[in-house]
Image 1: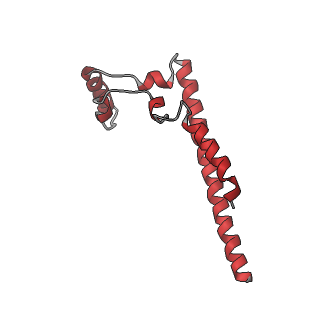
Image 2: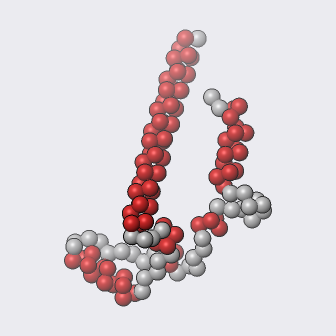
Image 3: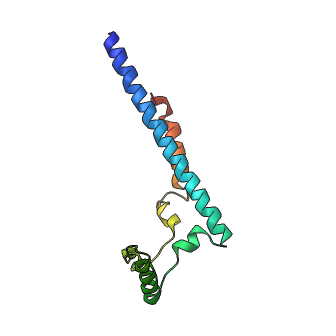
Amino acid sequence: MNDQKDDTAAYLAKIRKTIAESDKLIEQAGLRMQETDRFLASQGLTREQVMNFRFSEEQKQAVNRELARQGLPPIEDDPADAAPQSSFDDYRRLPDDGGEDIDRRKQKFGMMMKPFMI
C-alpha cells in the first residue's frame, strides 16, 4: 500500500515538473513575441504586415548573394508563397461556430474539464 502511494507521489511529481517546464517555455515564447512586437513597432510595422510581405525574384537573389557573402545558407522559396494568402483568423474560426473563437472555446472546455483534473 505504501509503495503504491510512493509511486503515485513520484508520478505526480514528474507531472508537476513537466507542467512547470511547459509553463516556462510558454512564458519564454510569450516574451519573445512581445520583444518581436516591440521591435516591429519601433520600425512602424505589425506582425500581420510582415507576414504579408512578398518579395520579387530579384530581391530574393540579392538577399541570397548577401547571405553567401556572409557565409550563411541561402533562403529557400516558401511553398506557401505560391498559395493564396488568407488571414490567420480564418483558421481560428470554425464555419459554424457563430463567431466564437478558439480561445473562448478552449476556456469553456477547460472549465468543463476542471472537475476531472487530478
